Image (cartoon, rainbow, N blue to C red; front, side, top):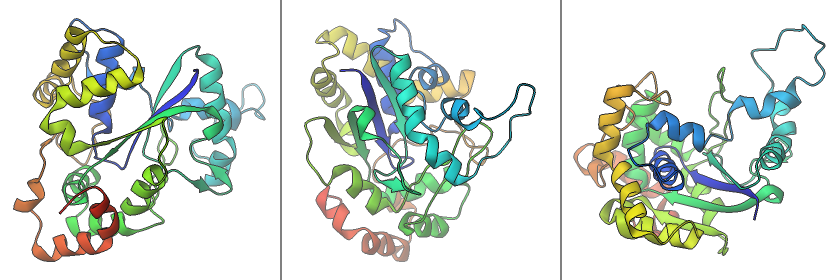
Length: 281
């Protein structure tokens, strides 16, 4: 059915990896496509270009386009932008989002009216804290605090409108608390442990293809080693200016060598319920 297929996650949880796999798979790439190409194929819902037609509709010809818009202005047109994306495409629209599944300033962040389905990726919050610290250019302690803050919102820039993260626990709960046949929930750790098994199962659930060679190729083209090489060769515009590289480690359990006991216990205290649900011990 036409509509949006959300690729959703809290930041630094495997969203980009999933988008690159799906791009290689759907485009049936015969050689690995660049991260930038994948980002264009599976774009972000927060891309300001989707929202501008509604934010600027009252401007007269020749008027300059404002650099900034209020949070309320964005909230008021978010669903309209999502509707427009669906109307412009005959097939599924692949949209990345780091929004939690809820409302903000009186409007839904991800409109269910225009949603066909969702893939939600969850990752151990202890590893998220380490990776997000590098990405955001924050100390680990500040990142842990950000992950516990229910008011966490990203800063908009020239190309992106804001996203509402909420806390890590609320983000995970909002997307996964209700079982739905149109929702596929994956653990990042399972993707790492056996990428072919997880991605092949996902591909068949989505009804994209049963061609094992095509699936195998897409898995290989989206391997972490391949993505690191592509980033080193051609770059990746989504890389944070505060980080040396986007594809930094891609490991599971790396937090054990980095977090102090105090930091670990704080995360486990803040997010105990959702960690238990997903078997993060």
